[in-house]
Length: 112
Image (tube, rainbow, N blue to C red):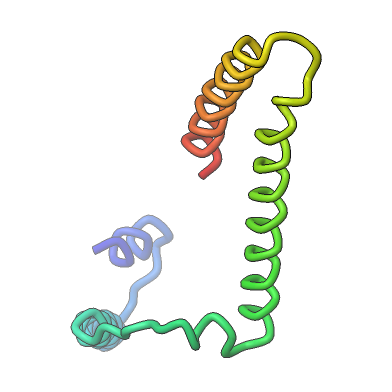
């Protein structure tokens, strides 16, 4: 329908054979799409290291996770060594953590 309208607007006459070919191609594409939707692939851990790009991504994600966990753990253990009351330091650390979780939630909602 869209192609017919475009041809009519441009003053071009397409033979019916062209429209039939377009329709048959679109029907084939729909059939292929529906056939591919029926086939589901099950992914395993091996798929994370199968290609070089996936290996690099997996290693980078694991390194980032390990570093962030180590930094977080170090900061939480370090709050007891701050000058002042231990209880106040703990409450301040908890407040900072709550704010950080809220900011992380906002950032993930915004940019995924």
